[in-house]
Image (tube, rainbow, N blue to C red):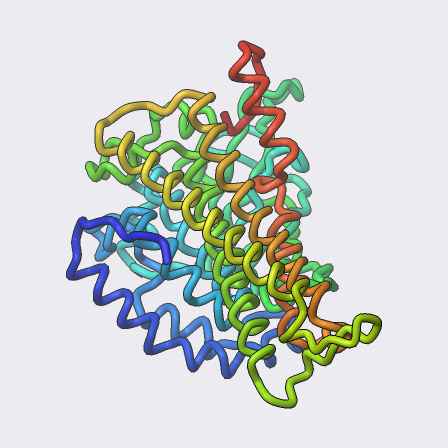
Amino acid sequence: MLVASPTQPDQSTRLQTAVTTLLPILAAQAAAGRAARRLAPESTRAMREAGLFRVYNPRRFGGFEQPMAVVLPLIAQVAEVCPASAWVLAIYQIHNWVLALFPEAAQQEIFAQNPDPQICASLNPGKNQVRKVEGGYLIEQGRFTFCSGAAGREWALLGGLVCNAADEIIDAGCLLVPGSAVAEFDDWQVSGLKATGSISLVATQLFVPAHRFLSYADATQYRTSGGRTNPGSLYRAAFVPMLVLNLAGPALGAAEAAWRYFVTNLNTPGARASSYPLPGLARREAPAAHETIANARLKIDTARLLLGQAAQTIYAQSQAGVHMTPVDSAKVNLETSHAVRECLAAVQALFLQAGGAVLHPDHPLQLAYQDVTAINCHGFLAHEANVTLYGSLLTGHDHPSAFL
């Protein structure tokens, strides 16, 4: 596991105990979630009752304000039994952190009534436009994609480009809307992370009051209203690295579980691991399998170290009140995407050395391969884009973006 921060050891220990207790519940519901293409209500309820949704919430609303170095190992542990549960957990957690950056009226409206809100989101502003109107914003017509955890939503964050009456783009950000105010469009027919229920949400002629809008420019430039009303260092953390890094825990846990399954399966008499027919070697005796185990172990451990380093960077700079530069942010994003790519490489290597049995849709390595591949497809985790962005910024090139 990642090394947890030494801060607030009692709370960290309580959260770890809570995760250990709920793992059997999540494991028992994993297959049902895949079949339904959304988490089983029992899984969502168990994580909520364990207090896992409020890890980043302000203490003044009953939250725990835990550093990411504490939270990421918990997400990874959940992913070892159900990557989809871990993904939705990570989504709800980080969106509650985003809510803590909103104006006080929005925080009072939600946190004061419910310390464990379930907020799904589609944060990419490039796909939809909203209009600035008197008293707030109007979503005339919008379809917001990949809203993980939408089935359990109580609220939704919808990203968009803001235009004025003359259709000029004047801002970009996300709007907070009640979950009941948007319609569902079920387009989540996928091969990986099936149980996350990452459907699209549709809004039509929906007015959103001004206090439920967060400008990405304000968020990335450390000038949010919530960053002033919530004094904890957690709310001085850089916006995008926080959003990106919290998505990496599920890949780490899924890869760890895949590695453990592969090794255990090789050592089980009569296991489905079979043999390599041309050299006439049982897989357990084959150098190819031995090398795969060792190399996959290194890749997973590399991922863990990179994620720990990224979490520590965010923590140290927020504690010191240092604003992370675009270059520093891009480096954390790069470390994060490289870590999830290492997890994918490890799982893929194990998958390719496990024999034809992995082609069955319910095989543990098939499931892990599909889930970790799906995680690597997230736009924030697009590794090649993060590689070129970091190198380009480091050599003095400018990249105007809503998120940097």
